Amino acid sequence: MSVDYAVRTDGLIKTFSGMEILTNCCMNVQLGTIYGFLGPNGAGKTTLMKILTGLLQPTAGSVEVLGLQVVKHREEILRKVGSLIEVPVFFERLSAEANIRLHLEYMSMTGVDIKEMLEMVGLTHTGQQAVSTFSLGMRQRLAIARALSHKPELLILDEPINGLDPMGIREMRDLFVKLVKEHKMTILLSSHILSEIEHIADTVGVITRGTIVRELSMCELRSQVPGGLEDYFFGIMSGGHGIA
Amino acid sequence: MLKLMRLELQRNKLTTYFTASAIACVCLIGFIYFVAYVAQVENEIDFQNYSNIFLFTSVVSMIVYAIMAAVMYSRFVIDEYRGKMMLLLFSYPISRKKMLLAKMLLIMSFTTLAMIVSNIPPLIIFSISETISPIVSDTLSTGLILNVVKTIFILGVSLNTICLVALRIGFAKKSVPATIVLSFVLCALYGNAIIASFGNDAVILALCLLMLIIGGAIVLELLNKVHRMEFEEQT
Image (cartoon, rainbow over all chains, first blue to last red; front, top):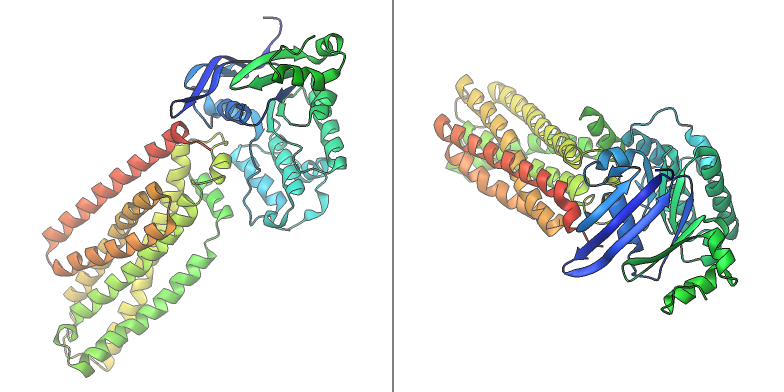
């Protein structure tokens, strides 16, 4: 294969007590790209991300992350994946630095400059302050730093810019682009802020009612939909294929 | 495994439990004199012999440590496996079974040791003061002391099973109060069984074996349960 994929799912189905949350879901995330994952609330974005990180078990279908089957190679994959899913969870009584240090120990990773990590997300001066005193935006920043700290090959971020201030949003945007360019990372991120996805994504995938209806590269999208991502997204939501 | 235990300790400090153990030890010293003295004053025949005084003290200490272990299990296990913390713990490339086992081993070894160690000062201090100026009109023999020490060890081992039973039920109910209350009730029941079988080695050995088997079964079952948790979790 000429193009390698960081994430490939095929015919993925997930049911919760008889209800199909994901139906025949096919996602293809190319290595070294930023994949913007869009969809209304309850469409199955978080469920799919949880399956990719082994937090949930697929009911049927195949799921490959970094070329490995998630079900069989959970631990191997987790070492190479950084994730932020749902709300950021921390060891509340410890400082930001201690949280990352513990994270690195659990990831069996050494030789990481934690200070540099905190600096990267703008959390330089929190010192020994316990994470329980952090605001939502600070927690979000710390969660991103933690997800990055063990130098993963794939980042899975669920609503990473939730609760960030405008400066934070721009900093994260620059950071994500830099990570892909300089560190050859692949980023899969979901967001409700369409303009944000439009800014940074190379590919956009839209999920509704448990199925990824369409995956399209931003280049194609720009040439096919003059109104940009917003028109495209609402086009799909209203039942069409988003392309006039 | 040792590394995982060390990491647990970095997240959950044991200082509180050390302090609690020290306080419990001091209280037990007070308690043993209290029992001996009150029995004399009130003319309570049952507690005018050493074996019952020692037994009563060690069973009470087991109850104290069972509650402490239940609190620790609630903190280390139940709280972390319900709600969001699970999302974080399960996203590490570490076998879920190993992570849980590390928590359990840590709590077991701490509470067992703490209980046995904190029973020693009351036993020694009381025995010495009784040889100098006795409160109780009974004779203190080496054989008796050895039997008491044996019982303390057995209680220390059984303590784990009792708390594991409580943990298992508390885990199913995801409830901290259930765990603590259960461990108290089970301890009271088991303590009576031990008192009734004091001196009868065969019965005590059988009880001890039974407890070990039950404890082992619960550990295995719970490890598998956590391993499979992904199937059931829905948020």
